[in-house]
Each structure stands twice: as structure tokens, then as C-alpha cells.
Length: 221
Image (cartoon, rainbow, N blue to C red; front, side):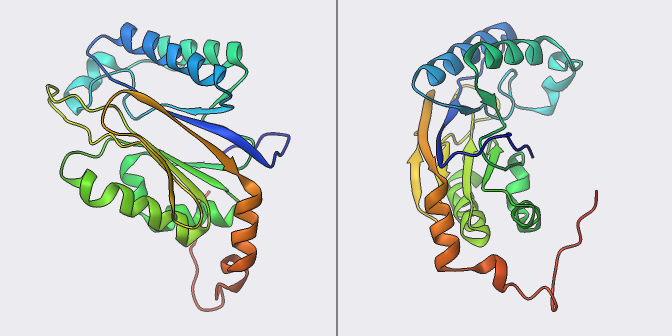
């Protein structure tokens, strides 16, 4: 979770739904190119998908693993500095989860209690869980916590050993899908309107009306 020093009423978010190959250098080159494209179109916050620099699957972990700092973090740091953008960070408080984390409402609630206004989940649901749960979970987390929720997936590769659902999506605090990709490689853009978020929280003041005297979530440091 990160908060920038300044606060803006709105900013442009870009989700890079990347086609991931078995060539790490190619993945990094393509990712950095799309980050530059997103920056040129006004994005201030850019998110990459889960396993953006390697094929999806535990069998690939040993071959593609890196130390931090390493090749991938260096490339991302360079392009973020070059474009003056945040790669997962923001002009508001942002909560970050990865894929399966979206199934746990408690995690999103903790982020909400800490003042997050945007939750981002890089993930790679498959062709079974994707159509059934991807959008459903995202809309649920958005409405429950009155936050924007963004999911960013790899592009679908039918020839891969693991076929991702794709459909990187942004949902507003009212539970409406405001931007959505298909299955192919693309960049999803949306303008995050923090004034609209404040209006929704004022209309339905969930944060102030929760019965913390009856129930609550214990947060661990």
C-alpha cells in the first residue's frame, strides 16, 4: 500500500494485458514498450499482470526466478523514472493483492479500513474460474468496500500450458464495470474519479455505520 505526497481528484489508470512468451527479455521489452505507450496516453498509474515476465506455472519458477534488485526490477524502475509514472503506486491510497487474494473479503476490508481508494489485483484466472468468478469477485470487493477495483491479467495464449482468461477489468465503487479488455494483448485505460468515490461513500456511509462493537477484523502488522 502506498500513498503519494499529493492528492488529485482523478488520474488515469492503465492495465497492461500482456502477451507473455517463454523469452524473458522479450517480455520485458514488450512490457516497457506498452508502459511508454500508456504514459504517452496520459496514464499516471500503470499495472502489469501476474507473471508478466515468465510463463505461468510452478515448473517455470526456478528458471525465471531473480534476485531483487534484478533484471526485471531494474528495467521497470528505469521505465517508471523515464515516464514519470507509478508502477503500482498512485495518487491515492492503493491496496495490492495477487490473483487468489481477491477471494478473501477480509483482506479487502483491511485495505478499506486503512483508507484505500483503489485495489489492484494482478492475476491469472483460468478458463474455468475466469468466466465464473473473475468479474463477480471484483464487483463484490468494490461494492463491499466502496473502492475502485482493477484486475490485470496476462493476455490469453491458447497454446500455453496454462491458458489465462484475460479480461483485465476496472470496476467503480458502485459495482459498475467501467473498462474491460477481451482476451488479446491490449492496454485498458480508465480515469479514476475520486470525487465520485466520495459521493458514493456519502450516499451510503458504510464506513461510519459498521457495527464494530459487534464484529471486526483483527489486523496483524
